[in-house]
Image (tube, rainbow, N blue to C red; front, side, top):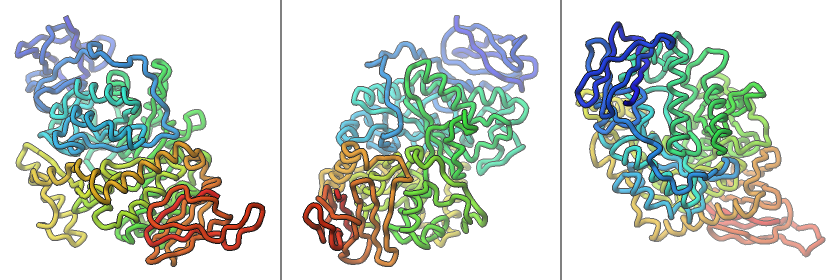
Length: 587
């Protein structure tokens, strides 16, 4: 018979496992403090602590009836992988594509998403990054209010659906990255506090008490989180993990949780002969996050670079509110600094934070350790209306932004639909089944944006089904009008990045940037190539620094000027660009 075990130090004198409604006593472990175990038949199960209600297993591999229901075992060995010996690829040199399963297609399932993978193959990306897939209340949501950190959201397709998606992606040569949340659990269905000290009041986060990484009992909590991460990589053949908001992982221990996690992932990579990796979302601007453990760092492979996004967003849109303030003063200078130094905030003052922030990125030769992007789920969905850049920018301006991302020294990442300038918004949507929680979320969202001048009725209701439906991609768009031309441009940029290694060279120290803030143009020097971008109001001549040989690719009207015969000095070598035009020039 199967052995059931659970860490439940909060239990007094009795722990039972109920299997299909029949209770079986568990015994307290003599050598593992707080653990209980015992044999019982296979079936749907829940734990009872003393005389309390039945609770789902903290390590539940499946929640077939949602976060509040009983757990169900999963035989991971039963799935037949198409390529069981697949090694995968490392992150450096790759292009990522962030995808939300519930809105990537109208069906909102893993199987439906797998049916669109050929689009990503033709686009040229290397990894699909899935937003969180752990169970959460209701059918749809962003996934960041998940619970049951070892299980998969049933409406998406559950454990088998995720495996089918990963297997399909691998068959097509695509890797899969999974976004995981360790800094908090959702407000509904989180039963961990009943079992033990999974949270602590020693630290506080935007979600309340912090996950316990350094107080009494934290050894087991860390093991729980590490075990969950390894399960995704091992049992589901996920290639890498994106770690949500690691700056909210409060940990005062000498060995930080991230260092421990990266060490255990490295061990699994050796054991499985796969180049597994970890990517952090962090707003600390601290190179220690990606510094190798042997050099005193936390050893993660890469981290998101909001600085590059913010600078590029300001240059394209002219927005200057909130955290854009520092970047908006001289947006092209901010873009140039990010492209050549990594972090914009590298120890100087941040007016938004009211203090100094960050430290210099190092080593400059490893720019691939920063992810660069034009849009993400956060930067779109956390706007009041969930409006994408395509709602306010011309196709040419979108093309300019895409070129700066996809020829950058960073690891580029796209957000689903960005590649064709999707007209659909991506809004904040929920499906909370508890009326009080649903109303609290609705009011909180509207109150947040009321502080920025938005009328309550203008902010979409997260619980309204139409909010979700508006956010689903329209797959007829890529075949139409300006969408098709932008999609071709994205394909061209990714192809050039792969064919011409200078356009993906991660050495920040080798990048040079010329710009004119007043005129609105910028030229990025990438070895023998120039990425020339005209964001100004009219036609302009952008200096190349040396004679241009050919326009390799352009979005908009571009013509070389001042070329000279071979061996002669160019006279005013430049490329003439229309407004909102970008060209990649070989010199």
